[in-house]
Image (cartoon, rainbow, N blue to C red; front, side, top):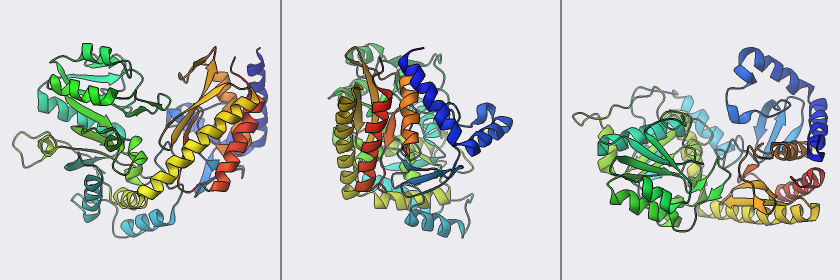
Length: 418
């Protein structure tokens, strides 16, 4: 057993000993849920902490242990947990009815807010998640072009639904992220659309190389394919979407997370001519249904969330993220734990460095990542097992100082990956 394996085993034992209630909750979960969870990304060993409540930047688990929340439900809680204005918006909305088989003014308010923020979006269609938005965008692209093939980054993520969830899907062509030549080679007149993220989110928060996305947009259009930008995570990083910062004008934009204020939602936005393909007033239209599309409570929460996420709030988040990246890098150097923080706006990811190379594959050096995660949990910082950090406006300067201290302690315990 290596030193890191021993450290990980010791941290697992200490973690489990402090959390008997979470252990019991996990045992109950395994009775009713396959593997004890209903969302793969939330699992980690020896068992996940059962979270009972969250307020602002603080989470409390079943054993009464409090944590600073750096997960924020994987970017969706940009204002932290149970923000009073969002809570009030949801309560007011559901007091008048939560779902109707009809258009509701709150849906229209949210659609208008989105279109006013993001220049490339003329019309919006709501779904229940970012995964559903991806699936709808694929259908729109195929309807618009009469083609089937879709190009995605091999390290990218566009949700857990077909055609994106199956690695062997014959109509999905996967190319390395940032590789202009591979993308150019894959782009033929059989391609309906190119789907890309401004940065790899689930793939380790790796920003696209300079000029890559603009070149991809041009290359897609050159062969008559659509360019679809996945801003499910990235929308929070700029007042007008990351596409504005990069000078992009995608045909379709995928959204979710922050546009629901913590509730389930997704959306596709884009050029009117494309979006009108789903209009029931159009003969031969692309039918798109969903019992809870544009759920009133989610629309109300999302509207409140977006209105609070102004340029000043985004600048504060991004500035804190930059400072955190620098501070954690310094702590890693002090601890002798070679690690690198990648960043896109207020979203970050810590990676080990082994033999001079940054390891972005979350499956590699799993013991190091697992040990660091549990060490942080032991210091009262709730983050993701793969090293991802998502800041919220609820975090204070004092909270950020505490986070840096916790990373210093955790990195000192864990040491280098190899």
